Image 1: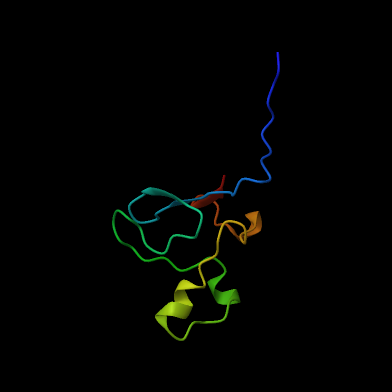
Image 2: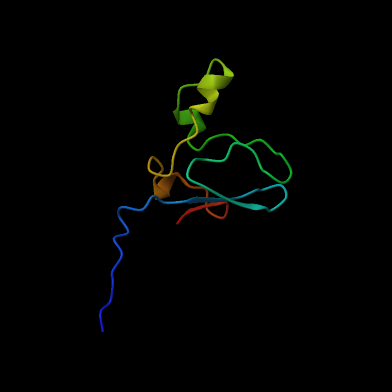
Length: 82
């Protein structure tokens, strides 16, 4: 019997976020900027540690990908990396 072991380091992690308003669960490779169900807008993780954006294009660039986020950056109960 042969067991195939998948290399998990090559797969990109998924960010799982729960909306704190309606409780909807969202999955994405980039931080979600708005709830798809209730349309509540979200700030990016580490918002106050980043340079504040001067326009909407710069603001969209503040949302990190799953590769850029560390476990310590997540808000427990609202985010997880999978």
